[in-house]
Image (cartoon, rainbow, N blue to C red; front, side, top):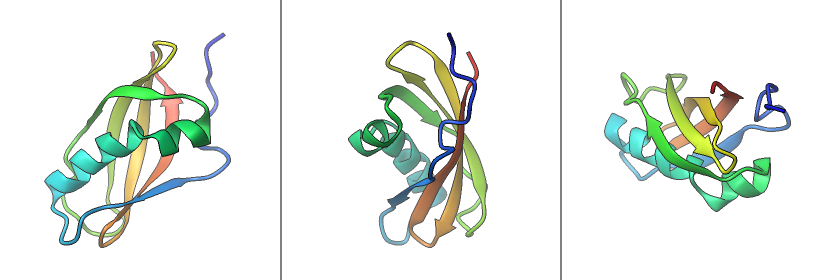
Length: 97
């Protein structure tokens, strides 16, 4: 049975980004974070092939979309929010295919 509930219903996951982060840095860090052991340990799925769009800017509150494939072959779509000057938070994740 496919999972249809939000991945992060229990808690948002937060990562720190390098100092003076650019939009390209947030894109790369989002991809790296989705594939991290921290995410796998917190949500019970490991992810590969993460791909994020480059956010339009690096202002706090900006959101952008990423996709990744879990260890069962399901594709997920994530919403990531820039929550600080050098911080991002995965605020939502759902199976899309």
